[in-house]
Structure formats: structure tokens, C-alpha cells
Amino acid sequence: MKTLLTFLILIVFSLASMAGPVIADVAVEGYPGDNSVINGRYKYYSTSSSGHMQFSSDRTDGVIQNLSIGWNSFARRWEINVTKLVSGVPTRVTVATSSSTGTYPPVKAWSVLYPYGNPLGLYTPLKVYATVAQTSLCDDCRWSNPATWSSGFLPRAYDNVTINSDVILDIEASCNTLKINSVTSFPYDGHSLTGPALASRLKLNGNLDVGVSGRIEIYSMELAGNARQALQSNGERGVWIRMQRVIINNPYGVRLLSAFGFLSPPSSVACETQFVKGKIFLDGYILSCQTILGANSARYIVTNGNGYLVLPGNGTGSIYNQYFPIGSSENSYTPLKISNTSTSWRVQLMARAEFNALLFPSTPHVNVIYKTESISVSPGVDSPRWLHQAYWYAADESAGFNHSSRVRIDRRTETGWAMTGSEGIPTGTGPYTYIYNSSTWEDFGIFQATTSSRISAEEIASGIGSEKDQIAYGTYPNPATSAGFKVRVDDADGAKIKLVSLSGSSLQFRTEKESLNTISIQPLDVMPAGIYILQVQEKNLVRTHKVIVK
Image (cartoon, rainbow, N blue to C red; front, top):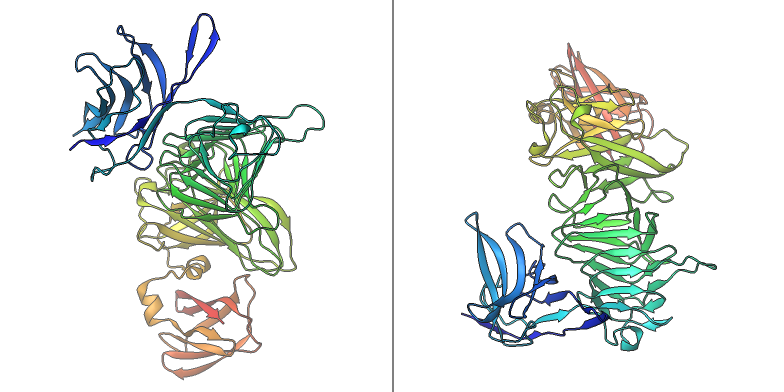
């Protein structure tokens, strides 16, 4: 059943010269379907022999493409047409029509024939209008005041906005592209877009370009385009956007054209970078965030090129513990969690996932190099252990790699690969995960290991080990108290036991045989809360257990 929709069309022309009019882009706004590619700007491309203007767009969502608004001389009606894949076959589909016979896109009397994304056929008011360039005309003017803008009316969803002054965002607003012009003369006070908390929310459907000394300080910005959006600042120099929330709501993604940082305003809680739809493509640049929410295998930060994700360092009295939701491509999600065991070290790190087939040997491996670099380091009084918890999926594995068998960690150096001695069996069912325990943060890769009976400290720290090791030979109680714990063995008389901290320091203790298969471990000194490793050697077999002390 056809659904009647009202189109509001505002055709605006600018006479550039006596040679004729300059035709503005036409925009469709409000077509059913969140992020529908039918919405957005259409460029003028021709005038028919009957004098009717024709518009088109190259946006696509992989199913719909070749969008157009034009006059059908045979049916004598205006149409919005798209090419849609039907059972894999490109098929021309009319999504809306109007019986108006004017030479410009009609103002009203449209019917939606194919309510893409709206199967119930609910009424949705649409707008079709000629877009304009909106330029701010005054300092300290409010976005909500029509006199602020060169057009004399407020920017609409697909109008391009240029800020040549200081504008206060005092309402929930939207626009297509936003450009904050540079200041190139003394005293270099930048143009700005600022606003009070909560009220200052901007929905951006196009690109963001912040000029030299430009500034944005508002409550939130939603990147909600229906084609990939770009963020650029200061002529490829980095800029901080100060907000409480940055929302990624674009299934086609957002890409950086310069370094960017999402930080909160002074004296505010950390800025949330919230993923709803789509990915962020770093394209070789650095992105600094404070808090990241909603990331998963469908929406994350793609550290393609030489791009890095920077997350905050640890504060006074806390350990470093950050989860980097990164992947080397839009089809490879390989996040990395980095933590340490010290509260005296102050560290800020950045990380990326990288894949280059030429850097890997023929040994079966995971197709990613996990790379980390320090932004700032203030060493503490101790020597902490650094835990690198790597995640990957089966699609990230090279031919011959078996995540059910033992793997090893190799360190990436300037000249190649070096073994670290860390081996173990990954856990998880997709993503798979493995924890690598080292004396510092470093670049590493995951390779298939040769057969070995050794269970590493890293493996135990992540709770890994065969079912027999964990059940038949486990420690208890676990978590334990500083007073001690018990361990089950094959032969209490022949077992040799060693207890060490994650830093590698040996602990002194006494043992007491409680049965043929049970030994009581009683430390001679009070054990601080933390993770310890118990090694039990019986004949030629060494079992390693993780012990948590509360």
C-alpha cells in the first residue's frame, strides 16, 4: 500500500553571474530506515529536454546504489529511483513518486512505493530541500538565532556550516559538514563552537574540519552519516575536541585525516567514545580517547597504516589496566588488554594491531603483530610484571594454525623475531585469548609451538591448563589467605615444590604432608595479596598452578 508523504522543498539558487544560475545540491531527509542511504545530498547532473532538473548520488550501502531524483517523461511523474540487488541481480526500483509536473522537484504530493527500512509503512514526514552554505556572521551568537546565519534560517541536517567567529551551541542541532575556519593573523585566537552542558548536542552527517587554533567544547557530538565521514584538524596537526560524549553511529565508519583527541572539558568526568554503529579508521594517525564504550567485533578502532590508539595512564595508587579495542583491518578484530602489578609506576601507552604478510615466517601464526609504545613513563620503586592479553578469531589464523594446541609468543625486534620462552594453550571459543607475561610492554606475535610439557607462568596467570591439571592437581582453597593453602599431588613424599611471585621472587615456606596426595603449604612470611605461581615437580613432569591470595 502506498504511503503518502509530504515533501518540503526549498529550491534556492544563487546567481553567480549573468551566464546563469548555480544549482544547489538537493537533500532528502527523513526517509524510513536508520542511516538509510536514500537520505542525504543529491548533486545536480543535467536538465532534461523538457526542462526538468535531474539529481543523483553515488552513496551505497552494498544493497542500494545509483540513487537519483528526476522526471519520468513516459509516466509523466517525478521519481526517486535506486538500483537494488534482488537475489544478487541489480534491479531498478522506484522508491517514491509525485504527480507534480513542475520543472523542479515537487513540494508535495509524494507517495513512497518502497518503504525501505520501514516494513510497517508508517507515516514519516520527509523533507527535500536545496542545500545552502550556512556561515556564522557574528561573535558570541547562538546557534538557535536565525540572525546568526547568512541564510537567515537555522542549519538543516544536510546544510554545510562554516564558523567564522565564536558560536554558542544552545540547542540540539544538526548539519552536514562543519568547518571551523583557521585564524592566520595575530593574536591567533581561534574560532570556536562552545555550549552549555546537556543542551549543546550536535548531530553531524558529514565531515568535520577544524582549522588552526579552532576549538570545540560542547556536551556531545554524534557522527551519524550514511557514507564514511572524515575528521580533520589544523592542517594535519592534532586537535582536542572537548566533550562529554562522542557517539559513533555511522555503519560506514569514520576516518581520521589528522591526529585527533576526544577529551572531556576541564573539571568534567572522562569523555565517553561510544560505539553504536561502525568503526573508526585511523589511516596512520593517532587517536586519543579517555573511555571507550560499546566496542565489539562489529565496531572498533582500525589501526591501519601506522595509526595508534592512546588511552589514559594510571593514576596515583592504581595499577595500569587498559583494554584497546583495535584491529588491523575492517575484517580483523584483534583487541589487546595491557595491565601491570604495580601501583608506583605511572605509564601512558598507545597500541595498534598490524598485519604485514612479509614480516611473518612460514610457521603457522595469528595474522597480527601487537605493537605498543609509551607516551610517558615515570618508573616506580618496584619491577612489575606486564600482562599482555591478546584476542583473535579463527579468521585471523594462518593456514595450519590450531588454537586448540600449544602456542608460543615471539617478540618482534628491529631485525626479526625472538622467542620469549612463553608457551601455553589459548582459551576461549572465539575470540580466543592468551596472556603473555613479560618484564615490560613490547611488540609480539603468536605462533604455533612445538610439543612441550611445560606450562608457562603466563598460561597459568590466565587460568589456562589442561582439565586434568586444574581438577586433579589443583590448589585449594583458591583464592587463599596469607596463612597458606594445600595442593594435590601424585606422591606427597617425592614432590618438589617452589613458590614464586609474578616478579620471579622465590618465597620461603614450610610443607606438611597431610595425606599420600595432599601437601599443606605454609609461608614463613605474610604473603601480600596478589597472584603467585606454584611449581610442583614429580619425576620428569612439572605442573604449574596459579594461586590467588586475598
